[in-house]
Length: 342
Image 1 (spheres, rainbow, N blue to C red):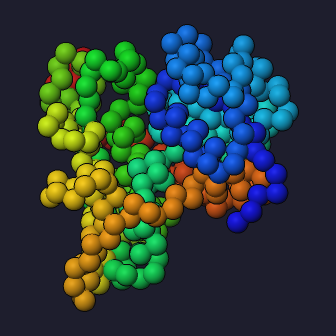
Image 2: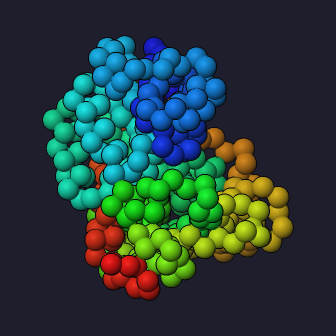
């Protein structure tokens, strides 16, 4: 895959540290970082130190009005991402955001309309697949028929919370969208990808604040059962990773097929193997361990290609939106358990 010209991009709003991984994947793909805008002095200083090649913009409009900028990237406060994305697309530019891309179904409906009207790309960095080498390898194995027809995916996304490092908005549900809309958006995207589902329904969902009554707006646990036209799914996410784990979360994915199954130990193997990106494959021939640390991550390169050629090789637009739609519907339908405040 070749790119006949270089994509120039800008960063606008950097409220989550995921922005650095988002930028790196584009730089590795050959894109050029031109501008950044962050109204918070501390965040702006940190970003400028990391990327001295980028010029600090005085305002959003300076980025929007530069016709040479093709892509705007953000990790804004979640509730502000959809509005920013619509402003970007109306200025004839593509948009990439950290997850969640939306905090309400109304936001999603508005963005879908603007994306259709403008024809611009609205891409969400679902990094628990797109930036995980073991997850990319699993996709290749499934497409090759390694485990037969996929029957079910179980996705687990535990996270460490460490409140002192979190900004106030992190604990306000209307700003982060709820645990299923936020963290579980990763698992919904993986469910669609691994099962090949193009439609799905939420069978049941529940959320709770079991352990953080001092933060009544926080949901620290959530799980979902869902049914797609390509397979079944179960998702569990939480903020209960203990301090004793040498990773921010023991992310696991289990994919059951008619002729075998795959387990991903994405970030750590508590059985003792060093590092992350571990894949276990069990089929009729036996048990196979695959070290996926050398597996390529094509999302950034594919997104650059799509920007230039107006294709959908990185993350098909409807797939991107459907993953968010399912996460938002699960959040809206969820039974509230435990201590959630008023």
